[in-house]
Amino acid sequence: MIQPAKEITKRKVEFWFDFGSNYSYLSAMRIDDLASKSGIEVAWRPFLLGPIFQSFGWNSSPFVLQKQKGAYTWKDMERQARKFDVAWTQPTTFPRKAILPLRVAALGMEKPWIGHFVRATMVRNFADDKDIESEDAVREVLAAIDVAADEVIAQAQSDENKARLRQATETAAARGIFGAPMFFVGDEMFWGNDRLEDAIDYASSLA
Image 1 (cartoon, helix red, strand yellow):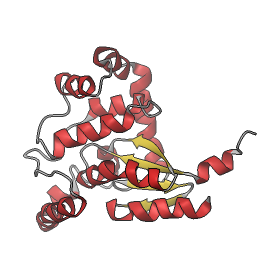
Image 2: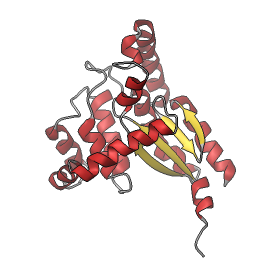
Image 3: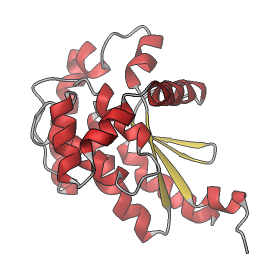
């Protein structure tokens, strides 16, 4: 019997992220394991956070624009990384440009390698403190997870796929997303790495 679409939706958590988001890094490293234990599907949803911030009149991350918030955030990241046993190095460039890897993620949203690609890219940014934007960087990540790098990069740079990422960003704005990571269970919104467990618990309660 084909399961009704409504039931499928109940068992899914949408994970909206940007590779430049440090708290998205923490969630990316944890979400698959947590969701799997609860029988919840993860829907990976890359988008560009920059245009969202620009709509608020910000030309960078609030962690850059607000000195005190930034100082707190880097200390908090040290604590959270220890808590979740996640490698962490404060990036020397923040936020790092990530348009190409986001295009790759938009292309691969439904591919079996999407989680591996996101985690590897996040680690490169927030643990290894390396460039993630260049073709060489993206090719290195794809090769490391056994994905045909040249083919994927070419497809990611197509006009069709560029439009896919733009549309995802427009959808994020239309749904009221104001930061990352953001999680949705149906229309229910959860913001921040510290709400990841709540989102999964909520999805489980609806099943």
